[in-house]
Image 1 (tube, protein in one colour):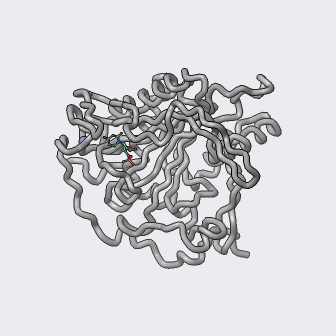
Image 2 (cartoon, helix red, strand yellow):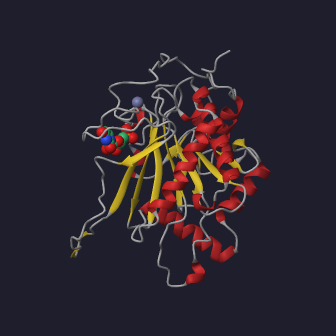
Image 3 (cartoon, helix red, strand yellow):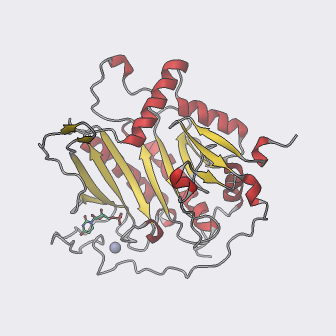
Length: 352
Ligand code: H2U
Ligand code: ZN
């Protein structure tokens, strides 16, 4: 009998409780590699028109400092604001809650032309270090519950500016996606006495077929339940709840892994690979009824959601059946991991 994984099936995501449909029989055509090459993007190291470059003026008239490493500032067009004393609406089917939050923009580098996979180890360490500092500082506001650090990368993802940067949205509630992960991790921890994602990473390391890159502290793999063709999940090998617990060693390990994963992504279609990436970690300042609950069930992790499917230009759209019913994929997570493992670990734009 043929393996279930060669015929249509669905897979369970234990982190959210959702399912994904896998249709591997639709990918019988052989892997052709990239089908076209995009023009090499040659951005200047400094762009006088860029609102993120050092020394430039932003749309609100503020001037960026001549920063040398990373630079963060309050988003001039914040989606949520710190002050909001409006009343909730509780009117049957019409419910609304006021939201409070802090939005920041974080430049990864003063260089307009770089991306994480083309930055060096110490430069990416600076990014992780800055994330840790921001997580710590923002958590000092006792009303903040959740701190979402993310990067939306590439014009294909709707990112407005190629200057390497990410964002932080912190707020007074736990948003839906981390709330689902919170519930699932807590239930698992209470039932098993172990962390869901640590048990998961250990099992994946034994199986091996979904691993993309790894080092002594972190593993990047295509999760068993991946929705996007080349989606990856970055997991620590040992339990750690949030950036607050990262020492210098973990910071440099994570930077190493992010660079190596990013190089493989860029090499896959020889393009500046677009994605949305984000960190999920323990909520902050949560008032728990039972102090024993703490946040020990939470494991720090990162999600990378890239939209590309078959080439630098062919993107997967989540439409039709997927908008109406559930997500679906053709190429299996195992095949995606194999393809990512097979590409070079030296960046295609590296000199020499
Ligand atoms: P993207 O990551 O989607 O490109 O967004 C960049 C953010 O930068 C966006 O949230 C902010 C926008 O509000 N921004 C400023 O804070 N100041 C500016 O002068 C322009 C853009
Ligand atoms: Zn710039």
